[in-house]
Image (cartoon, rainbow, N blue to C red; front, top):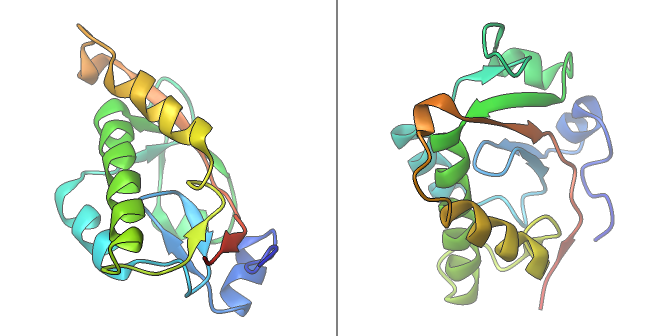
Length: 142
């Protein structure tokens, strides 16, 4: 389905979409894996910041109003995000999650990106951050 959540937070909310903290995506019910998202929320301290120096905190409420859509997170969040996306794919394949996969994770380049990220050696995770963009992906069912 093309653009099931629109292209703004307001459209996504109006269409009944949910903001998934594991992927930083607004997802249609067909793609939103609540169990995975809730589990992620329970283990990850996911502070968000407006700048790379990570001194300007950004609240969950601000994401909902689209005050800023590109936010910085700590490196641990990024690593756990990659792991959660792989879990989401496997849960879908095994019939334990949602059958639909969003277009954010259904491309091989995403797997390659996470492989590169997780292969980073000798990195001081506390000293690293990364930018996460809020996304509005399509979805497909097979």
